[in-house]
Length: 222
Image (cartoon, rainbow, N blue to C red; front, side):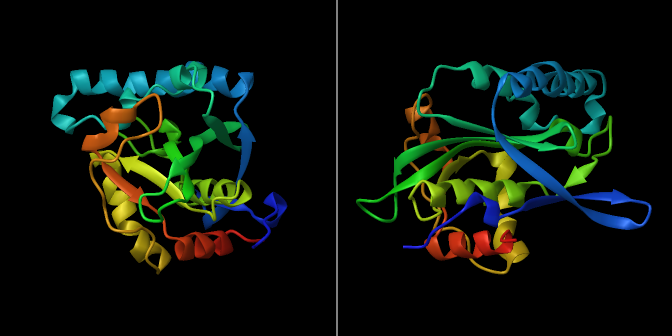
């Protein structure tokens, strides 16, 4: 059985300056009072600002669905199994992950995986009609960190997740971006862990393959 150490891996997004693209190191921490305060007073206020913009400027198209997410509320929600991680970059929250262990694999009977309940990049790192993003390419390192947590906790790096319509394009592009298959075939009708349970059955369920998990970890190995 492979052994994993968190210090063997490094997770980087991308930032830009006048000379071009630069690596932006992400520091993952367990969520705490500081990150909860940031989610409430910065993250949600940016989301609210963008939502209100679309009320006045409907010609700008559809408001992105992520403005309706409630990361602060989720951080305070009573869900004992939820593991909460926050990615920081230079004092700014870059994104967050909520994971739940011991979710039954839909492709390997008798085995469990890590369920990735939430994954999101900070609103300021999306390009919108109100601001330009400072960081990009955050999704893959965050997925990599979730994969590492799955490996560290004995689930072979495998992740299960439900995907809403707005995020599906990202996951569909992953094999092309990474250069290898990532997920088993799409499934429907799969329940989620509490608190959503039956509500998730209408969404696409994805589960990473063991081989893909190993390759994804190698990308981030120091």
